[in-house]
Image (cartoon, rainbow, N blue to C red; front, top):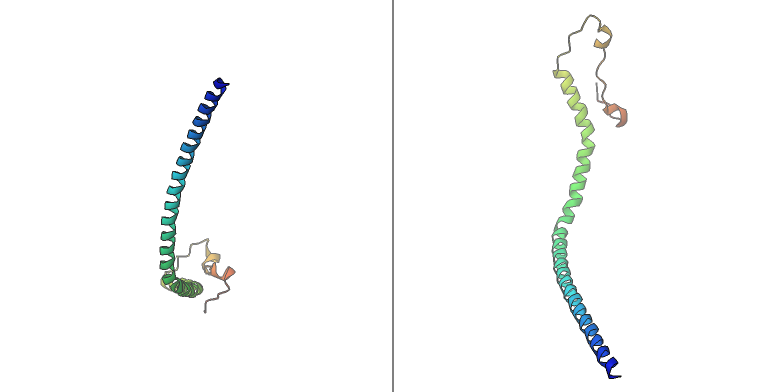
Length: 118
């Protein structure tokens, strides 16, 4: 009976030692993860503090961006008028009499609904 008690105690001690080493290793990993998460939460709080200062300006930037986006069709139409006024008409060729009277069609009139005056 003494023969079975000694190996049982040795195996139990080895398993207990292995489990203790494993738990120590897992505990050290969890401590490192906890430290990293604490540092990350500090960074998130810092970023949130910076964002609180910026938030009111973002609404203003979006409003100004909407105004600029609304003015783009008008600016595009005016730019086309300027180009048409400044550009010299191409010389008419002998077989090109039908195309000389046509003006360039603007893509702006297709979907936007803007019709430049004139």
